[in-house]
Image (tube, rainbow, N blue to C red; front, side, top):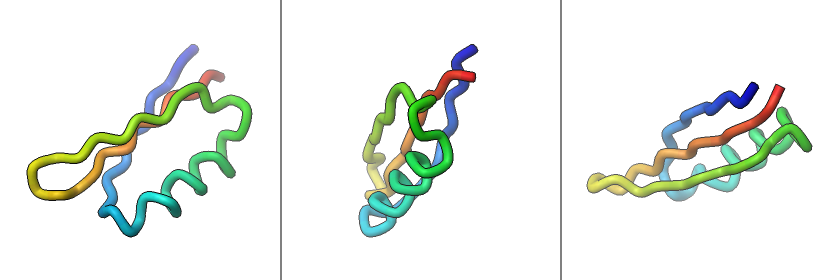
Amino acid sequence: MEITLKRKAFLEELPKVVEELIGEYGIELKRIEIEEDKKGCYTVRATYER
């Protein structure tokens, strides 16, 4: 089953958010998508399989 998480972050927080996701889900992590909104905030979507 694939599960997608959504996290919000500012540009300076992106490396920490991605590092935490990789640390927590490791090889189960299938995809990370990062999108910027109009306000300069980023949405990080991480898909993993359980």
